Length: 358
Ligand SMILES: *Cc1c(COP(=O)(O)O)cnc(C)c1O
Image (cartoon, rainbow, N blue to C red; front, side):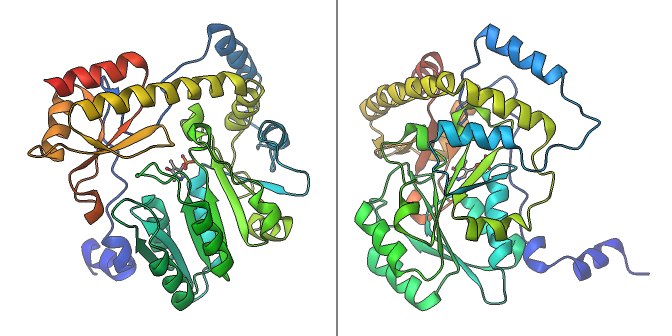
């Protein structure tokens, strides 16, 4: 009988064994400025109303397979035209996985600019599909000759463009995005995870291009704990992707909570607007401390540390002081000595700046 270590080696694909599980540290008691969460809570009456709704949820029953209350709420609040369908995922991470599974024939490829959202590459690995990362320019704009070359040569089935991009926070030139969509024979997914903090919305690109899908999430708006992502697009595409969606992927509590939160979407958007104001305060303060900040259209700021200071040391010192941020140094050559600060409440941002001043 082979030892369990040998059995694992024989059975589990080598690329899976080489992976590290997505690292999520213990953040209890810390000021959390690492994961782009909305730091605000709800008004007391809203919490009460929500709790009463949850008390009525029937946990002994399977959830509604298509969550119509949620899709209707989304359609209204996000003004999704009737000719487009809405597909829901357990976070947009699940939607990325569904898209990858749907195109995963031998030799299929996913392409994304880098540095970008790490899940695109990780999910490609899970599914066993090739991943092509195309480096951005030094200023985090798209390297268009490299993008178009890669698209022409590799012919990717799927291209992910996060707008704004994570972890750089910027929007890319609209002309560049148009050129990419036109050059692609595959699907182009515009990932608008940070839409509420951004000055640009790509929903009407669905009218212009057959091969575009728009993906969003409630995570960054204030419902990271719920896990609800959504894909908007033509029914020809979504009907196919819907076939591989697990029938009850959106649970009863998520459906009730999301439908409720969408009724009060203005409360969430108001919180996002406060974060946009805080973003500009934080940006000015970081610059005054000598950080090189990059223009952000999201609820975080990417910053390169001042000359002579090490990102890893600043990260550790802040952690000692119970403030958690994200250290990006070592993640990608273009992110050398970079840190990512999620924008928090005024008092959290002040605590951060106070801690950085020493
Ligand atoms: C956070 C993030 C998502 C994912 O979110 P879910 O929580 O899985 O909905 C998707 N895309 C980008 C670019 C992100 O930064």
